[in-house]
Length: 309
Image (tube, rainbow, N blue to C red):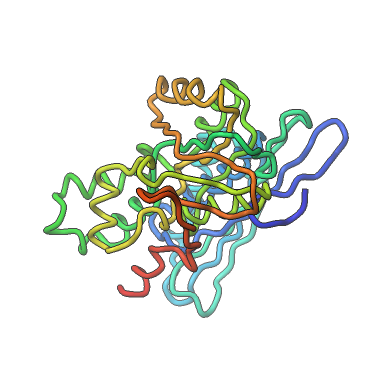
């Protein structure tokens, strides 16, 4: 499988097994950037049904402000994150790069999957139900609380800001467990990781990848209480903000409730938010009057926050 809209991984056929490749940078976050780099790459590998196995890192560091402690800190974050999910760090590169204001980590992750277990966004079929785990936007909530805590003072208590910062780990931005439970419980036809542009972009990417229409109900999308408050504080749309931690998946109608129950039993929120329909690759949102075309985000909502501050 080569490149395409909504196809976040490349797949190479080795005969007896398939190798799945993913590369992704971390550009918004500065705090725990090494941890982010591993998790977001592992998430995309997991959406194919593959097991993340080998990781390479490219670390670009700003001139004039980089210390040996910073390099060691980021490297340690990467090694600890990889160790936590059974991934081996097999190489990489680091350098001082002129023109940067903050560190940038680019991760490349390789996974393995049996041919019969491969899942891609192309597999979603008319009639399938759409499920989402955890809610949105988990990642944006953590980033905003970590990067701009001073903007939340007076709006949230110190305990609430600390809880929002901890969204990185609880409910967490990893979907490895979500993907594993879903695929072991029922027939999963497609999985997608909502990152930049949030759930709104992910729905469009899934529609284009599978070539079918999507109807979704925005009222059915779980938005955690703190996420709602932080999005309101920064005046951003929670459906258009970076949303790692949520897993968007399509499944046969008869398996939707079974998959949700299995996830809920493990403490992972799951909700049915729409369906795949016959028709051209467009995304429609359910309204009181019927339906309307969902506007595709031109950029991630939190990019506006970074521009403002």
